[in-house]
Image 1: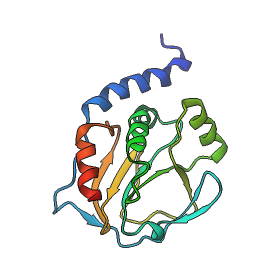
Image 2: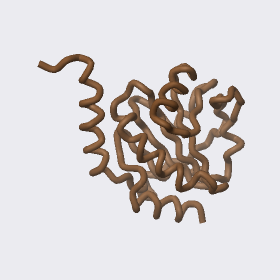
Image 3: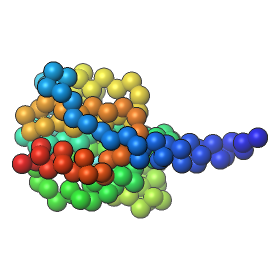
Length: 170
């Protein structure tokens, strides 16, 4: 019999195993969707308002997640490594988007020693995202094309992601 308190840690452990096997890939040209509306307002952890319009012309990594979601928690270490590798790249912007209260998110980040830039939406996300489950990650190129759309857990700090981001940032 499994004790309820062990359910989430077990799920996270299993999802981490799955993440190691899943390597995100770019969409084909025919699958790529253009983000038409960049008018999306978010609030960062300091309470500052950010509009996606400010990010036009940059490569965007947008991850929808939650602190209670085992697959989200499982892929966060790889996102932290990816973010650490690219945090100083002015052509690349990371947005970790959650619907949760900032106090809950801040406690989670502190507990895990993450410094990922998280945002809470103030307005509805662009229709092209169509979020039905989390985690869900999008990579948007400099011209607004959604070139990667991944639902579920994945390994985000692998060599293939480095190649993708380096290519998109050039």
